[in-house]
Image 1: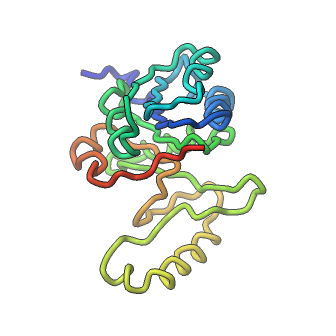
Image 2: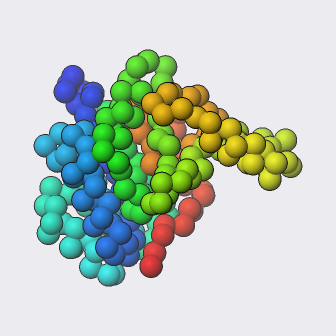
Length: 204
């Protein structure tokens, strides 16, 4: 049973495979850019999909509080992310890609948006490219209609996203998986990621 302290704390789950310096930069950002993800306030889990480049060992030397789940082969993103979710001790789980870097206070803002209502289960950030331009953060609901008209629907959603206002919360059909914060309780009610879909884990 979780105590009240764990209900507001974050477990960071990162799936990695031969991520090199990109992984190190990601970890440095979550260590420095948000109080919610600092090691004294959170749990860090890396699920290693059989890396051979020494990146996991390097990360653990610099950040010794990391908990590593090692797979002997590349199990894909969905399987590995679910491993991390099952191992999470906190109620809030941040799924973060190795090539994503959080901006100052971003996860605290996500947590605030997620916890504003008991009905909220998942919150995702606006994604930005390194040059400051907006990257696609949301997708339409996958239906027969949206798949048939996919180019048009994606263009409409992308155009609509340009006008999202900073600091305002929007309800969307689907989030991009690069970064999202979820309630563990909700995840286990609806079911974790579908492991029948392999999802490629980025590798250099």
